[in-house]
Image 1 (cartoon, one colour):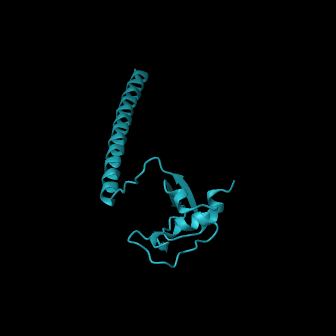
Image 2 (tube, one colour):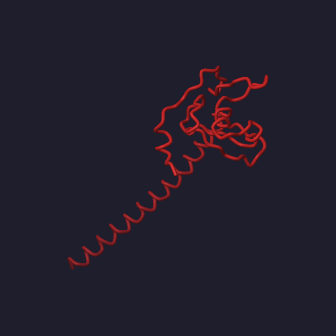
Image 3 (cartoon, rainbow, N blue to C red):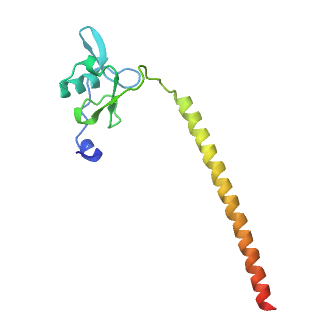
Length: 132
């Protein structure tokens, strides 16, 4: 089985069709506008667009207008509609995660400081006991 690095060692093949606001190229098929990378995936795997209706076609290279079949992967969706997460929501979730991580780090550091103080107290007591 090919590794992720092997797959992406092939160059991107960028669509020359017009892109939407998210950078995905769209083409007209039978009078209907569809994503070019979905058409490319179907062509490479002998499928029809209706065969992948409930699937997400992922651009593994991260370039939304790439139509290289080696860069495209199919993920079967467990939901009928994909929810778009706004950048503000992503930012909010990242801030919450960072706050939680900062609190956990502060707790660990406080425990380390407490343990260090206890170790220093024990060392002083042992030193003083050894002097007497």
